[in-house]
Length: 153
Image (cartoon, rainbow, N blue to C red; front, side):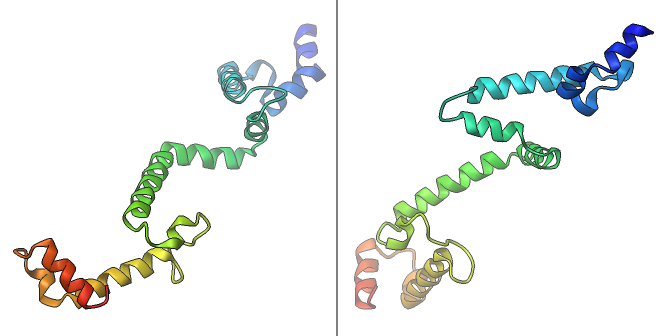
């Protein structure tokens, strides 16, 4: 009984484990999982000094609610979706290379003032200006270009 009391009242254990320390009811598997996660963060971001260390420190200091939200985003594969979106944006920047505002990383892309709605509107206007040319699949690119240049595009 003395060992149990000594264990449960150990200040270092309480400081290190916090609310997870519940005497004999302590969930050892959860603590091992937490420790493994901590080690992975430190292996990935380092310890002490280095460019990535502050990011690792920030991850370790996340509140539980923020950590759950981040985990939820990861489970829904948001990172892959964001990467795909950035890749698509890169393709748009190539296609619309003459549009100076797309070369600016600070440009608002969506919404009423966004570059993409303005581009969509301009493309739709250009297609409308082509009239029947837009629906005639037999026309060559040369005829298209001639028609576009005549209409000011």
